[in-house]
Length: 332
Image (tube, rainbow, N blue to C red):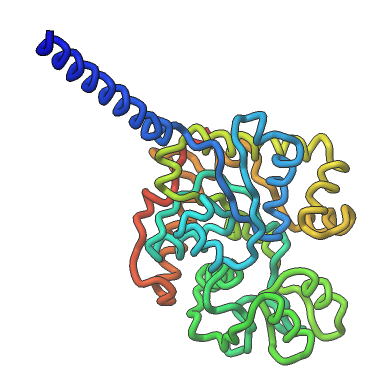
């Protein structure tokens, strides 16, 4: 009888231990499930504003995700937050994502948001009538990276002009416009309201605006590569939500302007004016812009060109793998 009781205690102990081990494995299983709650950093550029339509109208929720939109103006802050996994993605221009990837923060572009369609431009003194006329002239432009500098380099390359032929003055786009109006430089790469101010002056004009080069100053959502790999359904859901937000904007313009204006700190009328220089990428435009891995669209060319420009300017010191920077599957 004693032997029998000891044997039963041993068996009971083993069963209890097995039950405990089974319970401990459950959190591990839950961690492997898709993460439907994540954060995206957004600056107050109007091209990103439809994300707030998706939030306000419940499109994220309808598609099974909970997205926290975090306002963050500084690209450096967005990049460091992505590296620390405090956010899982952020919207910015294609060329900026290249710098992120070259900084050892693996990022992948999943859909395009917008294109600067006249919102950026080069203002110049009267008498300067072409890009070639900028040779030897003082041009205010942000030379430490960013969309303005990338676009300027793109235009110079198109005209066969060496950047060294330009007397570039490093300034942010806003400061560049102000410096031009103050007659401190011959030309400036800037945006509104400085384009309008140049037109209204008696000495300046808009030499060229970004609608002359569509698809170059283009915003995309870039997300942590590990998040994309582990959560493809969530990434597909935010892509779908963006497409639905664009369609909502097309059919409910007045309400959409109120939603986006509130998020951007502008009145509906002010936002409507700002949007004249922006082209949103809907589902059809995304399919064309991305293409497929076998037959890539313009995003591939722009990503490749961004790498070349930034290497040449020594803003990055190594070449990111272009095939790891774009995921074509989410827009198809």
